[in-house]
Length: 90
Image (cartoon, rainbow, N blue to C red; front, side, top):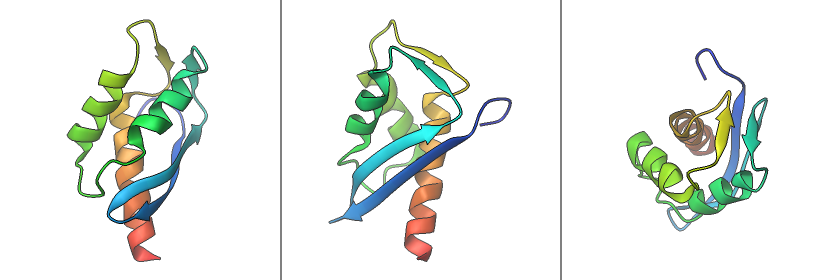
């Protein structure tokens, strides 16, 4: 993430959908449970979903009181798209 921290998304693809999504990196979320929420909302998203769609889904799933330090929904969406490119190249 420009000006932020390392953001990594590990995932599998099953039937054209994201599966076994795990977000990690050098960032902080409050509360900690927000990480599980983000993983859950990404689970099942279409591999064709663009960055805007993914970021909107993340933003919509998070409670208003969630604090994100060194990360944003947009940065997560970029990491997902990059992970999908790597998955496709493998």
